[in-house]
Structures are given as structure tokens and as C-alpha cells.
Amino acid sequence: MVRNTIGYPHLNVKICATHGGISVGEDGASHQMNEDFALMRSIPGMTVMVPSDDVEAKQMVKAAYEMNGPVYIRFGRAATEVFHQDDYSFEIGKAELIKDGTDVAILACGIMVPEAIEAAKALEEDGINAMVLNVGTIKPLDEEAVLNAARKTGKIVTVEEHSIIGGLGDAVASVICEKYPVPLKKIGVNDVFGKSGPANELLKEFGLSADNIIHTVKTIV
Image (cartoon, rainbow, N blue to C red; front, side, top):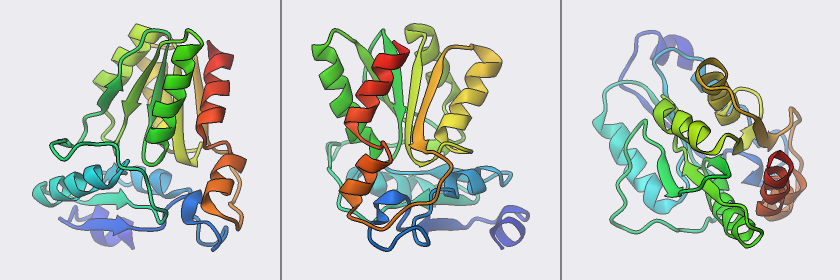
């Protein structure tokens, strides 16, 4: 329906879908959508976005309203940390540099951004200087920011509350494989369905945590 009635005629329709990802929690696998980025990215002309907190969500909705063309925005269910200031300004297609670094780049989206920030702080104590990018727009991807991260650090870790197939990790991999190959590790849901349980416990079980980001970064570094 989305492909034929919105994407194909390129209608000015904004789809704002809630309850995305593992953090839906107790409702279980049937309700935990971990494939939406992949599905929507494949529709020609569709813009795909996911906010990292309340402040960015408001800015993202406003930006989607002001642009012309079909948009898909994923929202979650669980309460999330707010780390942006009220004066933050979101721009479609532009990644946000939260922390600069030289040893590795952590590219995260959605509720994984605070986890990436926490991981970067812990890695700093171990002598690893990690760049952190908030990639709020999955499509169109900020290729310039991705390539700059690849050139500057030589190693990339992507983190998303989504399947490792077809989401942020694959979008980043496609760019660097073609234009500037560097080692890449993808953190996400590993081609499985979810489970029923408290959101925080599920995120940890599926490796969507600062601890697993730290472990993965140390492996690639």
C-alpha cells in the first residue's frame, strides 16, 4: 500500500509510526518492528528518519512537514533520555557530530545515540578517542559525514535498534565499500525476531547497550 499509493505517485504524505524496535517490550515479537528502515529505504523517493530524543523528534516532524514528498519517521514506545538543548536545529539529510574523535567512529541513530555517547565516555578512560555521530536521517544518508568519519578514524561501528539487514549499518557499508573502504562492525538485531520482556532487559539481551558498543569498539580497534 505504501509503495503503490504513496511512493509510486510520490505523494506529499508523512508517515509517523510509533512502537518501533525491540524497546516495545512486553508486547513481544509480533509487535516489535525491526525491519521498517529496510522496507522504507527500498521505496524510491522515500525519506526515512528516526529521532534520538524528544527535542529532535519535534524538530524532525517540523522538517518533514515543511519538505515536499513522502516521509517515514519511526518513533518508539519507551521513555527516553533527552540530551539535546531546546535550541537544537535538525536538518534532513545531515548527521549531527556529537563528539569528535580519531580512533574509531560510532554512527548511531534513534535511542542508541545516548548509548553511543555513554560508550564513548567510557572508551575515553581507556585511551580510545571515539567519534560519535547521530545519524537521524537514514535516507538520504549524509555521505559526506560518513566518508569524513571513515577518513579521519579508519574504523566504523554502526548502532541501531533495527535489523542489521537493510538499515543504518547497510546504508553506511554501501557508501564506504564503494568510496572509501574501512573496517566496519554493525550492532543491531541479528536477523531474528524479538521477544517479550521489559524494554531495558531486551535491549541488553540483544546487544543494544553501551557495554556491547564498548566491547565491539575494542574488538575493531
